[in-house]
Length: 386
Image (cartoon, rainbow, N blue to C red; front, side, top):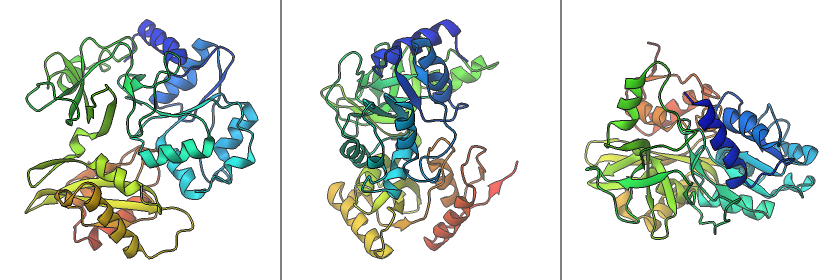
């Protein structure tokens, strides 16, 4: 739920403070209008600010090619574009040299904002290099309705630190808490929580279920809203959202972020996008496995690439990561908004019951995933229809 006044105030303020959008600008949030981004930044935010808003039905690739987004930006004179990192990864996969981008006049575009899933540094660097303008990662949730952390270009354009979604937005008192609820020191990964009260625009409750809201979000740490994301804050106050708390795995007593491993995998020059999840292991408790999608045109052997990826993780994170298995797949299971279904991957690998997500983009990808997991020696579970 939203309270109308608080929601409108937060969105109107954010349009300039966060996105630097002025009345008369053309603002495009390339999302589905039914998702939270669609509510907040296709409909309400831009129109409250007096901007032209763009509604687009299609994918970043294949409608008809990897230049679809850039064509829309050129045709409508888009000043600010907001999309998901997975859209940029899909474009990078199909057009790694940016040839399609150069076909269009993007001179009006000032900034590209990314949110919806963690943006790995390699994707951000590719977009910056290809576009020649600021690319800004920011972090928020359906429940908050607008950004928790951002590089607020309308207030002060901070230096970009790849891998970080910058600093907390005014109104959010963000803390990193350990398992006991104590505040973690800078650089230590923990549970990202917002000290109450939440700012305007955030959901005050769930429809018809106040107690479920309390149980899910407010009960784990007294006086805090639980984001269920894990990360850390550095000495300068920059926030690094690494993964969902469920994706912080315990490997032989060492807490590891799958997001940190994904960062290394994604930096391989042949990898377009990837997912790393922790699966059950009798000896170590959990071990990470990787699924990687290659860039278009890569013809090298899959085993050779996988060996290089594993060596990179060992060199950059260390043998403690126990990262020994990565498989090349043609696609990752995702929602229509572009979020990788890591939880579904993990449940399939561990033989747990899972449901076919109603929001899945392509259900056939899960069939291929089942075959890959079987090759890895896992016995994937089938979806439950209950």
